[in-house]
Length: 420
Ligand code: AMP
Image (cartoon, rainbow, N blue to C red):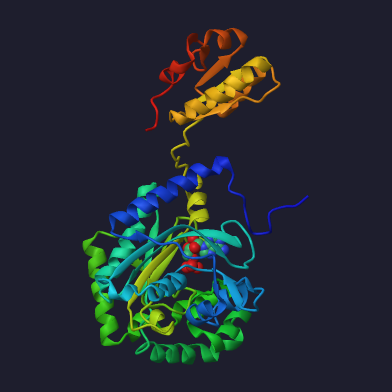
């Protein structure tokens, strides 16, 4: 028997209320902040992610699903959402629009060849938002606020908001030098990943989760102490905006994020449970990314969060979501002569805006009623020979058990009002 591939999951009907609710809350919140929806393809040219996310990042180094298509072009299943949106921004000439261009996506499948565990999958889904085209720290604050308001609207409690600034191409090289100088005498004592990253991406030593590396991380030089004047001014304004918005942030010097394109602001939202797999979402500024993709200098800031992790936390915190509406009516029938009229009645009800389904054929009335109960139907409409002859139908209320007979063309009146 086939199974879903490792690290992927079916989203079954009973899980759909979470997905629909999260998607609806996300879309409403993004639109309240003036963001407009964009959907990009599931796969892109492989070079897009190498150029943007960075060759020495975990994502590109070992996690992408990259394949040659039948024309021998190298394609990658999207591992993150920002680069594709920036590609679309450039391709569709959105730089001529008034800036910033605010874009969001919901329910976006992402693919990373990761070691699957709770909260970490190979196909997962994100909600993303991007504000492209301005450098103003007020927009960084807006994106942080949008993320925070979204989690708040879902009812999630006890979340933490951490922020940091990792500088820009002007001041970061100096900081990386300091970091290298600090780590050089410690190299022998670092874990294997850190030793490797010391050569390829020294910033990532700060987000090592290994216990043995923690004392070194704690004493490492802080990026905010090496900011140039412009980055410092940006960092100071960001914090003052967040304070005036009442957002309860904490500064975390270890926060650097896993993708190479970030500049200045980085932030994450985490739930109360500690652990590497717990981050609900994060983002930051990526001022150089669009230029790296061949566009004009276009400062931008964005945020992404994982839907599976949100669901995990909603369940952990016992937060209920609105259920899907149950089927209103099941049309049951007795005898072959009633079948065609039952098929027609179910169809007529649906055209009148009622959620109606036909009971399975060849079953006793009792079995058909059981089927209606399983679907949560509020009414069962029963057609037998007598009703067909008389042009009527028996309407059974499943809550009270009461039954009444009405003219078949009036059947919909006894159900809840049509949807439209
Ligand atoms: P990133 O793009 O790595 O910054 O991730 C942003 C968010 O996406 C994370 O905070 C998680 O909520 C979610 N996420 C990232 N990777 C995975 C994964 N492998 N499985 C499930 N969710 C993920």
